[in-house]
Every structure is written in structure tokens, then in C-alpha cells.
Length: 314
Image 1 (spheres, helix red, strand yellow):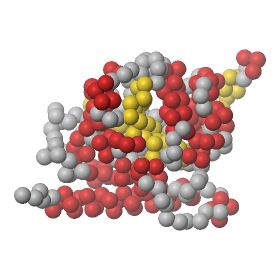
Image 2 (spheres, one colour):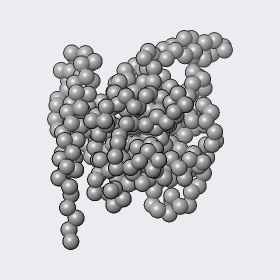
Image 3 (cartoon, helix red, strand yellow):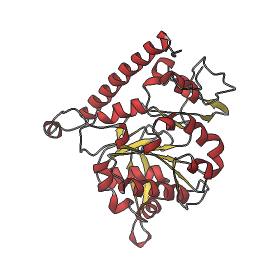
Image 4 (cartoon, helix red, strand yellow):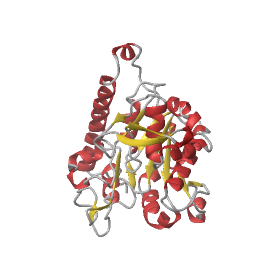
């Protein structure tokens, strides 16, 4: 007996794919609107050959979250991107490794200090540079990545361009005191994409970051501004290289009120998240499929909307 896909699920999937494409086109136009006329004239719009496997997906986690946060990701979106998803952690996990996942033990501290976070980001950067991938996309272990929406967004940017795209957690550039020689400081300000929502960097831009990001240099740069890893990325891109961050509303962290995201727009988003917000569980407002007790993050519910043929979906 053949399994038959319910008609409403097929219709939802087709609508989702169409809406994702429209959303990416809007992001592309927004990106081009920020460019100078001279830059626009140099762009030749051609179909992008980008494939999902061209994207280096880096997940930052720690051993104490393997059995909770990480396993939820393995069961959901990472099951669709296993080959090119790399899990950066601080301890071995034979169960994860034996199942064929790309587990990278960094040797970084397991705490949440600036040094520990920058250590793992440096490892992500170096492994990406050593790969043949075209994009580096960083996410945390409390993020759901929508592969289709991610591919549509990145495909909308001109090939071989300098792109740093994500969502800021602030409504203004962050200010930092850059440490100079002679123990002097200089105030600088720049935009940065919050790591808790995820962000992506094109290969061309990542290569240019090497003088401040490769090997031990990333941690050294982080120490110069005394800010965490995601801020350091923004500092390198905007202050050292003079490239403006592309702001996208399609990335989401637990620092925002996810209940405000309209359910109809959820399949269009590149990343989602969950966690505590104002002492309450903060996740997208999706009803049905799984109860909140069985799926407090709502990641399983989202996954079954995007991939209704998944074996464990109702």
C-alpha cells in the first residue's frame, strides 16, 4: 500500500516554497538598494548555481546540551543537511560520532566566557576556510534552520560578492573601546549580527577576514575590543574591511518575542529559536501536530509543516 500525501499538506508545501522565493527576492532588492549606483552597474544578474551543499553550516554547542538541544536538531533540520553541517563542541560524544555526524571537538573551554565563545568561532572559521564551501553560516544549538529559505536567501545575492547577512540584536550600532598601543583606547561603533539568530558570510568576504580571524588572530581581535565572538565578526567586517552588514528580518533569536511572529510567516524564516523570555517559555505560536508539552520549542511542529513525510510526523 502506497502512502498518500494529504492534499492540504501538499498545498501548504507548495505555498511555502512560493512565499520563500518571494521573501528572498525582497531581501535581494533591499540589498541592492543599499549599494551605490556604481556597484549596481557592475552586477550582472545571472542564475545562481548555488546548492545547499555549498553552505558550511556550523553549529556551536557544548557537551552539557548534547542530550537536549543538540539531539533535537539532529532529529529535525540537521537530518536534512547532515553532510555539510559541522557541530563544534568541547567534548567527545561517541553516540553522535558513530551516527555519522560531523562532530568537531575544539578543545575550547566549556563555559560561556568571551574567550570560550571566541575560541569556538575561530574553529568554525578555520574549518570553513579549509573547506571548499561557498558560504559560512553560523547558528547556535537553540536554532532551527530552514534549509529551503536559507538557500533562497543566499542565492539572491550576487556571486563572488562581499556579504555578511544576519539580524542585529540592537536597534543601533554597538559601541566598543578598541585597545590601541600604549594602553590607549579609541571608541568605535559598528553593526553586528547576533550569533543567537545565526548569520552567514560569503567565501570572498571570509577570505578577506583572514588577517584578523585565522588561527589565533580571531581570539586576539576579540581581546582588542573585549567583546564576544559575534561582536568580533561585526568588528572585523565593518571596521577592518569597511563592508556593511546586510540586515535581514528572516533570522530569529530567543532574545526577541517569538510569539509575535505570525504563524503564516513562520515557513518563510531562515532561522527560528526558543528559550526563556521575561521568565516565560519563548517559542513560535504554532498550534496542532504536537502539544506544547511534547514540543516546547515547536521545532518538531515546524519541521512537520516543512517536511510532512518525515517518519515521526503525525
